[in-house]
Length: 343
Image 1 (cartoon, rainbow, N blue to C red):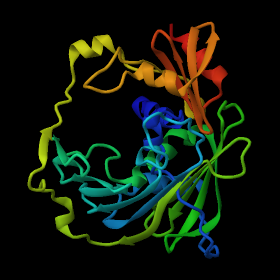
Image 2 (cartoon, one colour):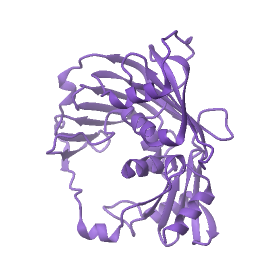
Image 3 (cartoon, rainbow, N blue to C red):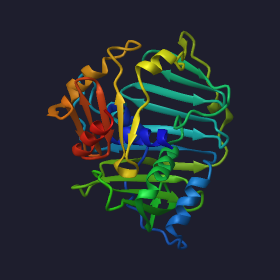
Image 4 (tube, one colour):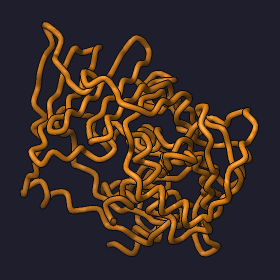
């Protein structure tokens, strides 16, 4: 549970990785008239969403956001990294799946066949292979509805939960499930609305709204969707001729664990903050995390010393010059308190 909270909070904090994590959580509002459906209780709807497993289905997920991210040097506007564009997804209902993301002439494909995950990048013509002997699909790899289920599971206990009418999403009838922070929660978010398929109980749309704004700050989800058996060939991957094939060699490293302690969770629910230590310098050829923070953030000072604050409409990240970072869908003061309580 703590790991799920850390994942969702980091996403809401507005870091680049977080934007990708939340990118598959919501969908544009449909102009179709609201369908007439049998009444359903809020808790009954929540339980059915968490209980049901994703059936075989295929569709298109469209992502839009108004996160207010600062410009990222070297990253073009509209990049898939910022959560924009469309993704085609297919699930077989038995743990296998496929996702294809196209943007700016580049296509990224993720295929999970039950024991192996392939990640293909057409721009570099590189295929990265990850093997999972336990046959479990890596969480959130290709199923966009999984993120919505995870979000509901994490914040339901600290929320007022209600069913607010119905909607028509991707030509499907749906109930509108609304989760609002309890009065005791300190968060920049006002509410999360989840459109749940009336028949299949699959999340079709999640709309994230922040305080001080009447418009959604993050929207994505299915614009078209069909349930039913999918072509088995979609869940197989053969690297194209001439492609570079690499094995994902990321494995648990005891020495690395000593250098990078596990994230600390402060609080719970909507005002959860995650405190982590950033990796020192460059790792695996990637950019120095602290250098990127300096490019993105606003210089700040406090009891923690000097640091940088990265703010978006759905949360913030506060990083100190010593490399400690606090993330959350919360105001800056909550992050300051989190840093102080985990010294």
